Amino acid sequence: MMEKQKKLIYKKWGLANCFENHIELNKHLKLKKYNSLRKDIILHEQGHDLNKFDLEHEFKINFKTFFILLWFILVHPSCWIDFLPVQYRNKEFIYDKNLIMLYGIAITSIVFYFFI
Image (tube, rainbow, N blue to C red):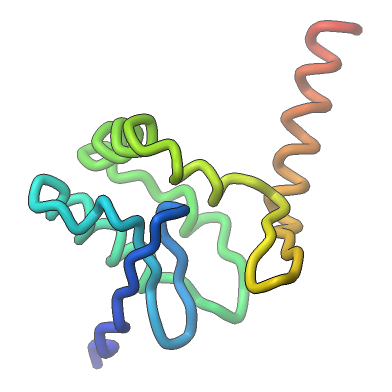
């Protein structure tokens, strides 16, 4: 059975986030020229299992959409906030342990490449 469409909330920061009752999208995704990208992002966000982190789901790439998404993120830098491992929301700091681990691996790799 198909899951009911979650309520869409447009924000000025970030790209997209999925919550139990709603999906947050960047306000620029409302523009008609991003209809296709918006649909793909909503499908991706609806595919999340909120009870676990699924790395395979995060890195499923639709190459048709990938370059449009990359261009969107470059043109709208407010999207980059979703890629920070620590954020301040609702008067509290929240962190994403998976992004912290990913940043740690990236920084360690760069250090080893240039200094060892």
